[in-house]
Length: 608
Image 1 (spheres, rainbow, N blue to C red):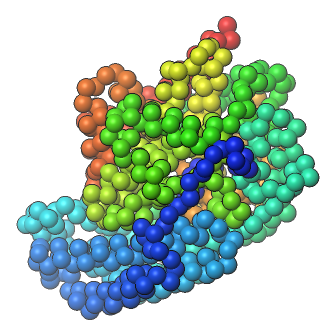
Image 2: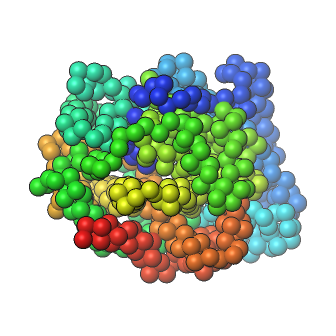
Image 3: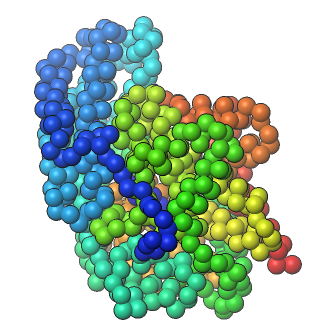
């Protein structure tokens, strides 16, 4: 029942450009609540407390006896509780992410989390009792009532957890103590990261601004930023190792009690994806390292005129790139033109994000790093957070997060319990939005040099989304496996990190002292273990989808919107079937990877 806070997107290496960017939008959260002391918020909190008590009184111990109509009423009441809890937590979470170092915002979030956890503890029985209903009985009820049958995907997902369910008492205990478990360590990580200070060339910067220097034309500045990141991460590595040790151990204990066969099982179940599909994706990407990242970075090494690449060259701009800043109005125009070129409907859905205060774009002290789109609840609308600094990559991040927003708006029609899309499919619209924007820019390239810069930028983004995220996934797999055998020192975690970095980046690179601590700032490892493979899944899926679009399917737009509208109501196999695609086919991933390889072919040909 606890609504998770949004997870900052990818490890966006982006952050003050000031007035040159124009008037950057700020969130207007009044569509959720006017303020922390709004009467509506108190009203909803009071309603929630009473609704949870009456729900438990009416249904606990009685679910197995309900007829189809009674079970439908029960599910609808549960959904309403989910909406109100989600609305409150969205407001508290979004305020907090605007300034994670503000004590009042942190306290307000913590208090909301505690209250809602306490209120919803009596609801733990709901999933447990549902999963004790016999399969035949539940199937009979679902077939008896069309309105109830609509919730079958929800029941299917809940019942996928059936083999791993604990006793009612233990489930209530785990729910009750969650605010002082993972949630507390998550907050410690967020607040520590937001408060870190980095001194680069005599000036003090935040993490976001320091990471931004890694994409600067000035190699000395990139090196200085990298070494300062390494220094500060190194100074704090014991704390970060403690966070990871604790969270991994907590997960191992819960997984062991539940009988989960692997640390990844829970994520696969939540994503509604088969372990063998993820394994096929992982293996396809690792096998492709030589023809993707290794080959591209060898090209980049030549372009930069270096004998070997250092880690601060990974996201360096090309020598022929300009360092022109893209102001906010141009970024908006670029993305909206690309969206409307695909379909005017897509642009119409995206428009309110810009005009109604649904985007918070500027870099501010204490603001969470990275970017995300948070769906809030189906009765309201999504909000997008960026740290916009006018780099071309920031335009792509806008296209990415706006794609999430469009997806979330379309899926809201499914209702609260069915709107949420598994992570594996949640990246579809975002990566597709990026691809539309990239193709629009590529088509408008004035000359070969501009085309080369655009292609190289897209290849780098794809490597960061596919190769880097699968390397992250391998690191997490190794981390959780090692932690199962005992406490890990910072040096041991560092060694696991380095074991995947050289393999994924290739022989063009050498690694500075201190790079071994760079695992410490990736938020996904803390917030959502094994989340990262969803990016590679989404990128591969979108590349295959885009190929179908380019082939000229006349009904593509209509099918695409139907897929997004489905939210979490359909399995990936069912969603992809209208496009003639199947992610369970082992060769599926090679199609997406070959698109990246083809772009590298074109870049190599330009060298001839």
